[in-house]
Amino acid sequence: MMNSFIEWLLSDFGLAMFVLSLFFISVHLMMRLKTITFYEIVFRWIAFFPLGITGIYTGLTHALFPDISASLIGWEPSPFQFEVAMGDLAMGVLGIGCFHASYSFRLAAIVAVTIQYWGDAIGHIYNMAVMQNFAPGNAGSWFWLDLIVPAILLLCLSRQKATS
Image (cartoon, rainbow, N blue to C red; front, side, top):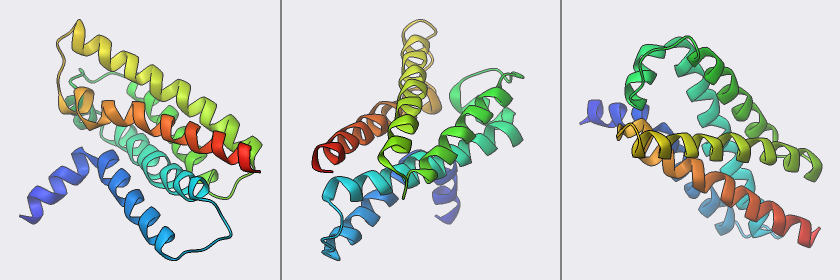
């Protein structure tokens, strides 16, 4: 049982962090702190866990365990995975940096993240349509999170600007 959970966690880490962010959002909302808005709360926890912690995790896995990460995505191991690792690591650091950052920092970070993640999603779609690559790391929750996480962050950021 525990082995299955650990295997799921390691292969679907982004989804686990998304669920963890929903937990922290719920706890934060239950605390009924009126100092920050709903959109600020959602932005902080989505930026921290599914973007920040996941980016660091994927950066480390691509850099330190390229054969494993490549197989989960349906790739052949490649020296370009180190470059992917550095991009993921940069996105993770930006996500964590967004937690208490200014609006300008957040805007710049989320523009970069959106370009990276939606570009990744286009690559996933290409791999599904042309290469018939439906490996879990290409067509599973990783694909959907590449679409959803930037969309949520953009929505929250636009609402923060409207209220600040």
